[in-house]
Image 1 (cartoon, protein in one colour):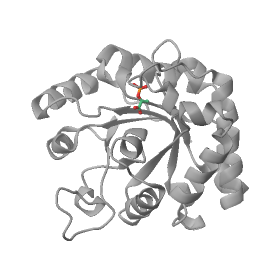
Image 2 (cartoon, rainbow, N blue to C red; image 1 turned 90 degrees about the vertical axis):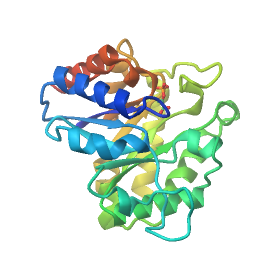
Image 3 (cartoon, rainbow, N blue to C red; image 1 turned 30 degrees about the vertical axis):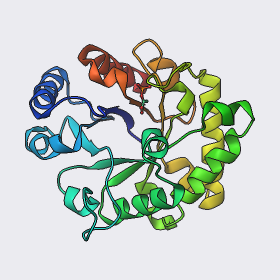
Length: 256
Ligand code: PEP
């Protein structure tokens, strides 16, 4: 399985800035076959960047999309419209869940629509600070996986990526804390057990699980060596060229 290094640019960079930043990444980036480098620029930059990107070096992801392929849905963009532009899409990011009110039902439909349109969903799951304090992490992760993947048949289960992103560890959240690698290991166990229950042991082992939450060059190695973790998803560090490149190089070293 590849090791994934995914950068979520969120609402940063206009088209020109995004293009210059992509150019700089590609100039610095060797072609690492076993490390899949993915960036998720703002929607408006996806089309121009899809013409600029060197797909041997890296791939594009959308940050979001809507589950209907077409129709009366003002302001939305469908997975169908993103076909050919992106290989991946983030679904259920905590900012979509808690700022934009996306519920489990909507997230499940989005995962299904992504797979239907041959775009790999990166389904983000994770407990909040208070859920963690009340010992609800296991239940929360199980619920999010069960409902996020409820429309995905076993034949398609290996077309999905999961990202464990505890909300309390995301750098832009007030009072964010670093997750200990042991916390991440416990969560990965829950995630793989749940996949095993929902599908089978083979799927539980085959689905890539990423970690996200204040990942930077000084802690990336520790997270990437947690058993069962197959990559990292970053917000803040993906916006700083030297940090993003360093983390890709750490991923490469961890692999070899
Ligand atoms: C994120 O928002 O997905 C994220 C992981 O952000 P950060 O790396 O800044 O904590």
